[in-house]
Length: 361
Image 1 (cartoon, rainbow, N blue to C red):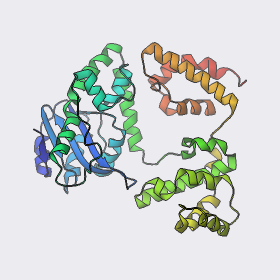
Image 2: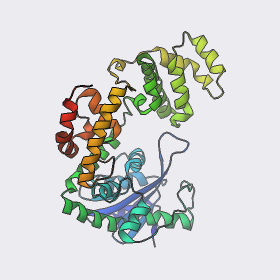
Image 3: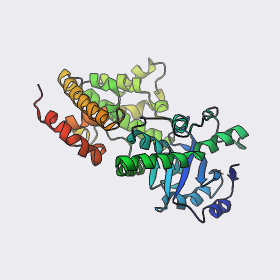
Image 4: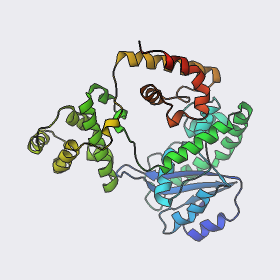
């Protein structure tokens, strides 16, 4: 039976003597906020499962030493969002990290596999899915919630052992360690995406001045969402941002008039929107542009085909070696982005160098 931990002293007592690894997972809520609200922390220490209530005063501080202990590997599954929830609540990140989803991909088992599917494939155990949309902030949690939460860590030890063996046999354990370190570094970077307009496909149909206006709006939206702790889409949705950026607005009054004619526009933020639209960013001249050129598409397709062929030769799922966005950045700047450095560059540079060196049609 899992143990419900609702005092910091009880948690510290269980963390006195730790093995070389622990299983770790979280439940959090992010439906109405920008920052995730940590609602539960599950810890597997050998056969002991702790369900830790982080809403108790002092509990995040009691958790922090475990998270930062460099001598204890934290085994998690698809940890990227959990990292942000833990950082916001505890001020530290779980390092070193062994992410079983990434490990399964590097072992050639499958890319982006869910926890239930991976557990079934490696252990043969079928897990229930019934509490995925629970309100984890309510107290007390139901027996079904507690069982579901415990299941999320109880099999991490079996996954850790099996995946470590596979990666060692393939000589790829250092790949996983590098990816875990990169994931931690990304979790520590609280600055937000520098060029958020590139993530919107519709941006490629805007000219350069319009893309700069879109970048201004998205940067402003990010700052507003962080400050007010509200989802970005509640501040300004993507479609409206692109529409606003497409055509320059002549004045504050014309912007207000335009907003009045939009059914879901943030009319109360008209002054802030006008300020954002009309104020150039210090670095917007350096902003890469989202492109829709046929030549770039053809060149990108060749890079993607080469990556896919090399992935197949290595037995890796699609998208693990290099995403479309990483390849676009490589094409745009002629320099290897940070995401492709390390073992990925070592694998891909001999394959992609001839394609990158060839002139653009």
